[in-house]
Length: 94
Image 1 (tube, helix red, strand yellow):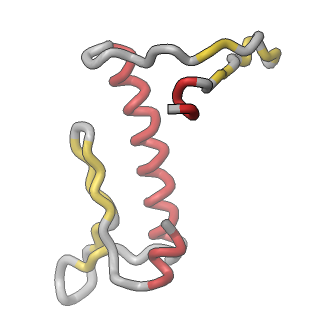
Image 2: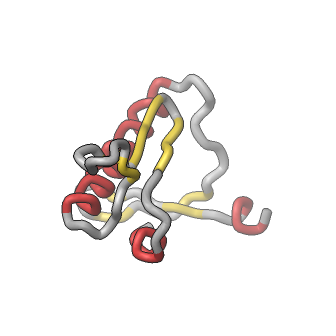
């Protein structure tokens, strides 16, 4: 509770920081802004995972035996499933 109750933040306005203010409340469930914030995060995660697979840093799960199709992550609504081969390289990539 100490981490949550004493957290402060500031905002950059035209490159200049504002005064610090305490973080008291988050977005309520169903707030229209929360959907846009979620999409920003999910799109960034999608780009990162795709680039890791392209660079052969992360090995996705091979769907077929001929290895033509790899699935590294699935995202739907507010869920993300990351899947790959059981290797230490994948653990380090995460």
